[in-house]
Structure formats: C-alpha cells, structure tokens
Length: 192
Image (tube, rainbow, N blue to C red):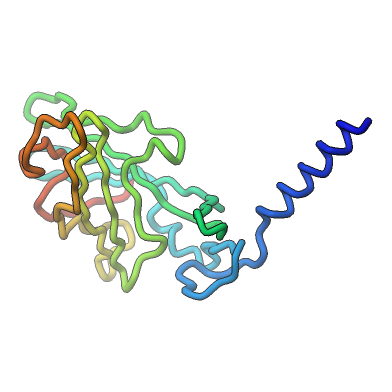
C-alpha cells in the first residue's frame, strides 16, 4: 500500500510539473513557463501536405507534416509546447527514373531532417536541414516563400550552408565536399 501511495505522488508531481499553463498564438515572444504556442490562426495549415517541383531533370517531393503541441524542455528547467512543421523529401532523376535521395521513411518527429521556423514571417518560411551522420551531419538553410496570388505554389530559394563543425571520423575536410541533395537554385513547388 505504501508503494502505491509513493507511485501516486510521483505521478502527480510529474504530471503537474509538465502541464500547459496558457495557450498563446505561434510567434508570441514573451510567454510564461509551460506555455503552449498554438497555431490558433492556422498559418501552418497552408503548408501541410505534399509539394512537388522539377529542376534540372530532377523531381523534388517535399512532405510537410504537422506536429501539434510538441514538448521542449531546457536545462534551465523551462519547458514549453509548440505546434510545428517538419519536412521530409525525396529526389528522383527524371532521365533514368532513379532515386537520388529518399527520406520518406521518416515517421516520428526526430526522423524528419528538415525543421522549419515556428511560423512564416511575411510569407517567408525559413528552414534548416541537418543531414545524417553518414553525410557528416552537414547543415544547410533555405527558404520556402509564398507566391502572391498563388495558394497552391511556393518558391524554394535562398540555399546557404549553415554552421558546421567536422564530426570525428568525417572523411570530408570541407563542408562543400560533402554530398548535398537539396538544390542550390530556386524553383517552384506545387501542392498536390
């Protein structure tokens, strides 16, 4: 019976520590510990789904996945919840119909290699890609940009290498030598 009481107290303490304290719109800068930054205005909804585009005889497929109320905790003891989009992608060479890159097996939050800002800013959605350890965790940034008057199209643009520190055992001495599958040029994606 004593063990049961201890377990009940521990469950209560754990549950009461990590609970939502208030719901606020995404993009709120000043918020209390435990806040839930929610997509109240549904600004992320436009992006959810599959987008495709063609560049240099390659078909790029990006799938935006919505992750509601994702939990973050920090070493300081602060924690928060936030609605987020993450992205997976696939590239097919249209000349020989071969798969160049396939990240479509991502199913959980941590499997998705592209993380996007919590909300678009003036129609610009900044994203970060961190590759797998096999590609030395190479990092790049790019943007998805709304096209005025086009609800089913966005522009992929603004590719740039991110900050990168060579991991132990990485055979590449320069970041630019690591295979990069995301395009460096801009192009249009259409929602399917």
